[in-house]
Structure formats: structure tokens, C-alpha cells
Length: 505
Ligand SMILES: O=C(O)CCC(=O)C(=O)O
Ligand SMILES: [Fe+2]
Image: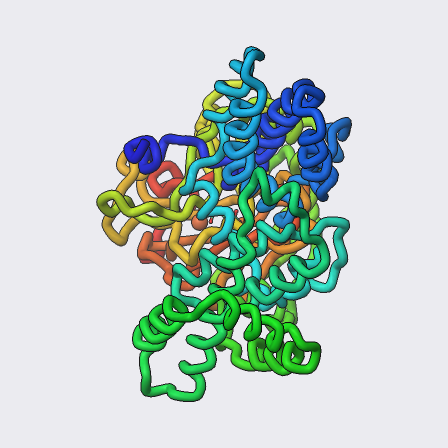
């Protein structure tokens, strides 16, 4: 299966809401089948019912409810975690318990569960949301995202999965935070029946929590000692510790007062935010002396239908056109965007697994909507290009983001469109959805941050008049906290604008 794991053409459910909705359907079909055969488990069927009564499993949602459900990263992560880890265990349990029934439906479904890369990306997504927006893991576990309480929370096993990954990555502080909440959750709802099917992670969790706490504490009290050394000490010490001692330690750690001290210490040290993160948090200072007006002048068409126009930044020039995409066009676009590919921000480097930014596609269907949108860009900007040119569509997923980058390609790597038409003079992003939380477009070097507004479009230059790259055009997409982020991207190439924007002598 290794090859399949590293094949970047494989769809990742986590990297788009389109993918997450597909996975929701797989889970639904799977659990429907389990329920159908549950009677034959007799008393054991209790465990299935208690599993399904946990948050998240809910049939009969409307399409709109499904969309909202999946737009919440906690639900999305929980879905990916339990389909990739739990469903295969249920599969085995049913196969072993019900011998004389045909369970071939499950044989096919179990092949569709998310693979390790997908689960890891989902975990990274949650971690990214936590880091970039400086959220508290304690809050997230309870369904609070950026001060907003949602009706969803992470399960005991979700929390352990987060802790394990942070431990693996050597972030013992974050790891201890996740494990700590998991230990509390365990005291609340211990479920023996479920442990029979899914395994009982309790002993392992306690040992991991103790190790993570120890390593984190020693990196603070002995800063000269490396985390590596502390890790080895902790692993060795724990290997020699009997279960009774672990239980005693846990009893102390769970004591209310001790736990409070641990919590305070775990949250004491914070990383300094990058300028990109400050932008994502909406903390840049407001710009002054900018205007909003109607643009009547670009083309003859606009004299009939003026556009609402907002200046975002003067130098380099960035502007926003409001209400330029109709809902009906957006719906048509989404309908045509089922088969999208993984989008990456980094160049491929051997077998390294790259972060997916989003699912995207060149909108290649030569529909009349695409021509209409291209014509609109021509009307808006006065630039010159064929209205049959392709447009890029993107749909973001669980905590996915686009690192700070340039759209011009002068720094070496060339794409076919650039070879044929010249470098990307300007970029135009149409926001095809509102994003309730997160997902801003940020220009970290000039302190500009723009929140997506459905139907509006953002415009900026990547090059100076004479075609030299303008480094201030560096931009990025903040991770989506909650929402379904859709965009259309249009690049305006240099060559066709030759007679519209003459170079300065
Ligand atoms: O979606 C955005 O806000 C920006 C996307 C972007 O930078 C790109 O596609 O190059
Ligand atoms: Fe870009």
C-alpha cells in the first residue's frame, strides 16, 4: 500500500469540503450497513449503539446541514479520525461476529476510508488553526473556536490522536495539552463496551501524558539540556515503571489543585507570532485615506452598470470590486467542480509528503458562465485577454492554507501559461463563498488583510509597469477556521497588455 500512500494524485478527503462531503457519505453507508446487521450481534449490539450515539453520527441531515457540519473543523477532524481508525475495527468485529452473512458491501466501503496521509493532514490542519489563531486546546476540545461555542466537541480518541501526533513531532507542550484533556474526558465517560471493539487506549494514554509532561517540564527547568535527551530519559524511565506507579502518578496529576498548576504551566510559554499570523488574527492597523466609489470609466459597458469599487492599498495597488459574481454563477461553478486535483504550495521533493493547499481545477468546461465571468473581468479592469481563457477554481479544506508566496514566476519556475503569455502581471481572486471564521487573504509585508466576501473580487499587481517583480505582492491564504472557502483565480498575463499599459520610458 506504500505506493498508494505517496501517490499525490490520490484524493485527500481533508483538503476540501467537497472531499469531506464524500467521506460523510462513505461513513453513512458504512454505519447504515452496520445497523442493518446489528441485531445479529445480540447483546453486543449495545456497543454499536453507544458508539453511534457519540457526537457526529447523525443521519437525516439536509444537504445544507451537511455542509455546515463539515465546515466545522472539529467535526471534519472527528469524521476523518473515526473513519480511518474506528471503521476498520468495526469491520473486523462484524466479520468475526457474524459468520454466515454476506458482508461484501463492507469489503468495498472499508477500502474507501482515509489513509494515514489524509489523517495526518487533518491533524496538521487542527494544529495549524490552533497555532495561527493562538487558540486554546482546552477550548477547542470543548467546541469553542475563536470565542464562538459550537455544538461539537472532540471525542476521547480524537484527543489522543492529536496528542500522539504532537508527541511524534516533538512538540511536548502541545502533546501534554491534548493528553491532559483526554485524561479528563476518560474520567467522564469510560465505556467498557466500546473498548472491546476499538481497544482500550487508557494505559498508553497515561504513560504518554506523563512522558510529555516530564519532557516539557525539563526543557523549561534545564534549558541547556536538549529535548532529545529529555525524551530518552523519559522513555527509559517509563519503560521501567510498573502500572501501579503509573496509576499513583495519575492519581496525583488528576488532583484538582495539581491539575490547575499543570494547566497554568502548559499555557505559560507562547511563541511569538509571525507577521502573517498577526494578519490572520485581524490585528494589522487599519489603513487611512482610502476611498470607496463607483467605477464608471473602465469600459463602455460600465457606464451602464457601474461597479462598487474599494481601494485596499495604494502602493502597491490593491482594490476590491464588490458584488461582481452572482449566486447562480457560483452554484453553476460548484456543480462543475466535483473532480478537482490536489493543489500544493511547494515544489515536489523526492517522496516527501507535501501539505495540500486545497483542491483545485482549471475550469475547463467552456461554458457560457465562464465566458461571462471572463468578460466581466475585462469590463472591470480594462485588461486584454480572450474570454475563452481558463479560470482556476479552488475549494479549501480542514485548516488548509496557502503559505506566503508570489504569483509571478520570475524566480525560476515557469508554467505553460507563463511561457505562452508572459508573466502574471496581476491577480484577480473572486470569492465564491463567505467564510464565517478565518480564510483571509493576507499580504504580510505591507500589512494588508482582506476577508472573503461572497461575490466580491480582489485585484492586485504582481509586477511593476516595466515587468519587474514587485516583492511587496507577496501574499498568502490564512487557514480556514470554520467555513467552506471557494475561489476563482484569474491571472492577467503581461504580453497581451502590451498596448494597454505601455512601459515607462
Ligand atoms: O485565495 C486567495 O485568497 C489567494 C489565492 C492565491 O494566492 C493563489 O491562488 O495564488
Ligand atoms: Fe497567489
